[in-house]
Image 1: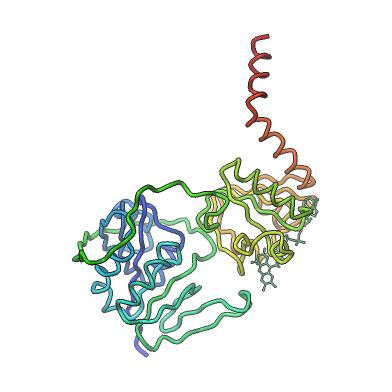
Image 2: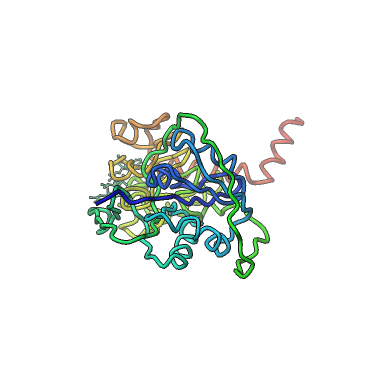
Length: 319
Ligand SMILES: Cc1cc2nc3c(=O)[nH]c(=O)nc-3n(C[C@H](O)[C@H](O)[C@H](O)COP(=O)(O)OP(=O)(O)OC[C@H]3O[C@@H](n4cnc5c(N)ncnc54)[C@H](O)[C@@H]3O)c2cc1C
């Protein structure tokens, strides 16, 4: 069968590509349309992935209008790929509806005529033969690549927009709430494993994470116990994340967990076993009880946040 033509559509906010963009660009053999705010600067993040991108400086996210404008641009491609980011998941079905195609959501690989999705808890890959034009969303892959190569050339495009489409109006963009945001988008994560002793401990982990501007994540052992929601599970059958900082509390570092960790710039591990894989991959390996360490952190952070402590510090300074 002849190779299917393909194109990636990547929604951009604030000149930043969402998680999964590089996977989408690769799945589309480097044929990329960037759309949104700050597309020219965002194109630099595709250095080494593609030589040339089409870019539409379209402003704030408007799924309906963008889908209408982009549908004619991508209708000639058999496979239209979008990152499975919140905006990508919003835009994909609208494009598919306008193009009269099915959507295959959450693919983990797109090769030739085959799109693979993970099923049965991630233990099995299902291969779907592409026999008709399709829209696909792709999950961010494990590992954040260090991209090298020339910055792609940017070809500005301006598809015809319609006035008939009604989109939600963006009134204000608030910073994400670290306790509820998509883990895949979190830059700092505090992860907890079976070394933490209770569900209550995970509430403490969440509080400490929030105080540090980080999100809480967990291993499968913990989500299987029902101590935290599955949406917080990091790994091959959970969320694939790409944080800059990862703190692992009582996590052994099984491959199914670390394969979903990306390539954090800094890893700190607290574990009673100095020889487990998580300690081996840590920049700072602390051999200690993770529960006691977390308690101490929580108490120091609450002291730091307590104005009375500041007052006494001033008194001491004056004395
Ligand atoms: C098909 C399949 C898919 C899977 N998908 C995932 C997935 O997506 N994500 C995932 O995480 N796992 C996944 N798993 C499970 C994975 O194999 C491991 O079992 C799991 O990651 C281990 O979690 P853990 O590190 O919390 O627990 P354990 O492996 O039991 O490790 C607990 C760690 O805590 C340490 N510890 C114990 N007490 C303390 C203490 N008081 N203080 C400090 N440290 C302490 C121990 O030394 C140990 O290192 C999958 C497995 C399969 C078969």
